[in-house]
Length: 165
Picture 1 (spheres, one colour):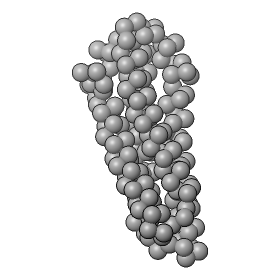
Picture 2 (cartoon, helix red, strand yellow):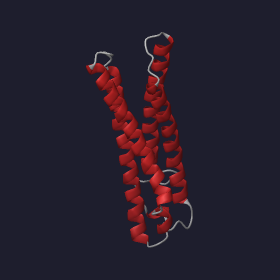
Picture 3 (cartoon, rainbow, N blue to C red):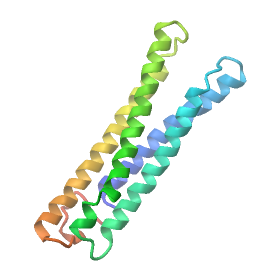
């Protein structure tokens, strides 16, 4: 199954998804009421939700691969396995940060007085940073287990923090 880090990542991803979904709902409502013409926010939030879905799927895929019998240290260290995971997290952080910067600029220029969007995007960045941090902790647990076992990984050796059942 998946470890506690993965469960925490899934919960955080769900929270970020709810926040991004709520933002999209608000953007669509504002566009329909004629209060906004901004298409880039709609596109960036759609991309964010798509990347979040990929991140969540890849989180469970990564654990499935690592739980497979006979996983070697070469499989674990494979950039084909780890690099997409890292790039998804970095992309999510960059998009949310871009949104914060554009909202801040819009506030300074007087286009919006909405502070809640800044707070929501700041929270989204913090949640995604936490997700990436949990992924790094999970990766550290696997690395530690691999160092203690040699070339073949055995899920039973990983610490109790990363429970496998």
